[in-house]
Amino acid sequence: MTAPATQDLAPTEELLTDPSRMPRARRILLGILRSRELAILLVLVFVVLVATSRNSGFLFSSDGWRNFLLNPSILLLVAVGQAAVIITRNVDLSVGSVMALTAYLTGRLFIDVPGIPIVVVFLLCLAAGALLGLINGALTTIFKVPSLVITLGTLYVFRGVMLTWAGSDRINAGDLPRDFLALGTKSVLQVPVLTWVAVAVLLVVGYYLHTARGGREMYAIGSDPDAAVLYGLRVSRRVLLAFMVSGALAGLAGAFYTARYGTVSSGVGYGIELQAVAAVVIGGVAIFGGSGTVWGAALGAFLLVTINRALPSVGIPDFWQQAVVGALILGAIVLDRFLAHRQAAKLARARESA
Image 1 (cartoon, helix red, strand yellow):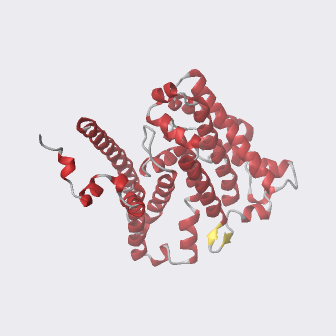
Image 2: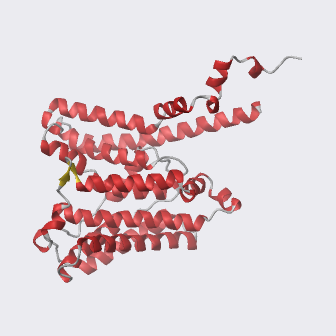
Image 3: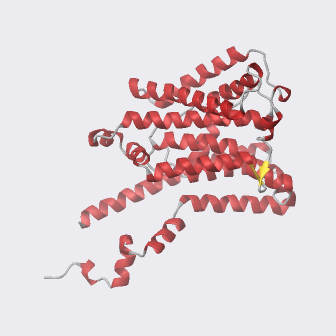
């Protein structure tokens, strides 16, 4: 009787066919080389190199370096929260309106409560955003309505509340404390404060998603919600948490928007929800949930903002700027589907051989 083919493999061949038997360092290296994040990083580096070759001030100047780090930071905050929601197979389209509400709330707090500590303002904006996120999550989980529909509705509701509250009023830089405005432009070790905050948020959320039990359950819910329910996972609680994280980070982004630009009008946050979804998808988070990382979403945010800043410097018209972003989104979705089918085929072959 002939022995199975797998028994004829040499030890080195077994290592190649069984990743679990590879040395840990090698597994990590292979994981990095195969990651979507590395591909996005290489594209980002390519865009920066091309733009810098045409205009050295794009990066190698005090303003160029500062803008490279500062401009994507607000979108990064929103994209990290959006990634947490999409991982659970949901989406939050209300983040732009939440950001607008908290941006205006920030200005009103400084005007109506003179001398209020800056830390208290940020905490209140985080709490307000989390509350609005809780509303989104509760409506989604209680009524079992797709989050796309729920958050599309709350997008208009929250925006309407903001417009009714603000009216024709406008927050100006003169209404805000100088120390608060400095947070939008100040740098520490040549890195803007806003970027430091965005990176800190990224590390905290990324660590939770990849190490905490609740974070891993979010991935399980996104992979197969029905199986997660049968397995006994607290699906509603995790979805609520994801929406609250998204709302809180949108609230934080609204406060930093006010610090960054010094003015708040009715147009704050328009369109950022679509940019956040684009950053998340380009960053490798599957639109159907269950896979991807916030690191990829952060790189996607940097890539989007850098492309929009780089293309005009190389003389590309506005139309093609939008077309490039659209092509990136379509390419990311097609790649996700291809990788998903490829993985499914590998699992099927593995089951057959077993």
